[in-house]
Image (cartoon, rainbow, N blue to C red; front, side, top):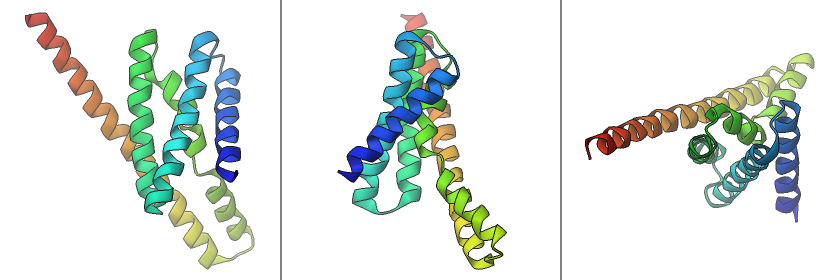
Length: 149
């Protein structure tokens, strides 16, 4: 039941974020589905691995592939889909708790929460960056191959 609530919140959050940034029509639906996908993959991987960093990296990579594919289908920049889809993954609660510990001068808690936040954000960034580079290189290679045929 808790996973259902989390998936619903992730989907609604992605939809609200996309709508706030004027994504309309079918693109709004696909951006929202990307948010559902990113959190569903994260939850599934976290249940199997119990490693939030690996789950965040792989989930970011998968949602980047999704965003790149949707961008090609809709002739739209990939960031339209990627940012909306990645919203559920951003470590907002960890950042909140890190700042809370900072304000309470709980240096040990701040260090633990801040380190987790930075490492998770780094894993997300690495997943997005590596996947984008690999996807675009493969895409350009396939286009050049198609030109020679």
